[in-house]
Amino acid sequence: MPVIDSYQQGTPSWADLTTRDQAGAKAFYQSVFGWSYEDNPVGDGIYYTMARLDGHDVAAISPMPDGRPPQMPATWNTYLTVDNVDATVEKVAQAGGSVMAPPFNVMDSGRMAVIADSTGAAVSLWQANDHIGATVKDEPGSLTWNECFTDDIETAAKFYDEVLGTSHSSADIGAQEPYTTLDVDGQGVAGFFFKDPEAHGRMPNMWLVYFASADIDDTVARITEADGKVLNGPFDTPFGQVIVAQDPEGAVFQVIQPTPR
Image (cartoon, rainbow, N blue to C red; front, side, top):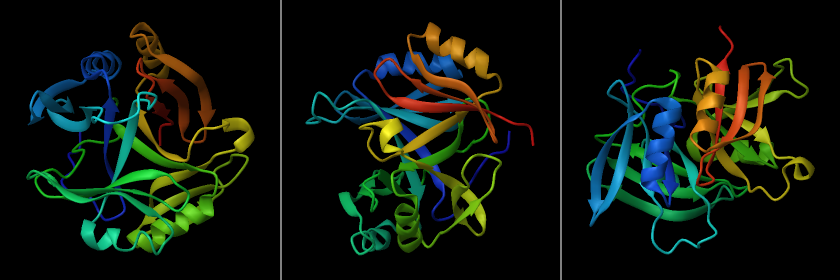
């Protein structure tokens, strides 16, 4: 299990779940992915829970902040690593995005901000200090991919290129349409998925998280047994078998059993 010790700017490095039922979420994802936990106090009776596989950080579960509207669903959040969060945020408005939460320190772990890109998809920016993000990826039960789900891929891709200094490219992957990736040093680190207004209805533009599975059928069974839902799949993609799932509080996430390379 290779251990990660750093991320380049523009690379997805972390994901956390914001939920109203932190205890229930912990039980659900432990059943599905085999996570263990460490509760870190961040306030009076408030904990930021680190999820671990074999002692390595893979994700986190946090309570819904006060003041959020009751209709707001539980959500998985994507974090992109940046070298300097303050300097990066200065580029957001000029590139057509907006700043939802200006830069702030997260104790000694790092410094972050929350932005919306030029198509409205929210994403967090992470400047690491003591906490780099996930120390294990691409293993069963860990984060393996992130996608910007947007109704305007080219506009979104240009936004990240301008703000993060990344590039983007499209390639024929044997599917109906070419696949666009966000690239760092010529390597795809995240993807873009087209939000079809007819097929996806009122779903907002957003970032999606994918977790790896060694056996997608077993993962489907675990999700169902833990009172989650499989919304779509399993279905075949050029990268492997995928499901779209929802936890008991409504947070949507994807799971993929990758095609052997």
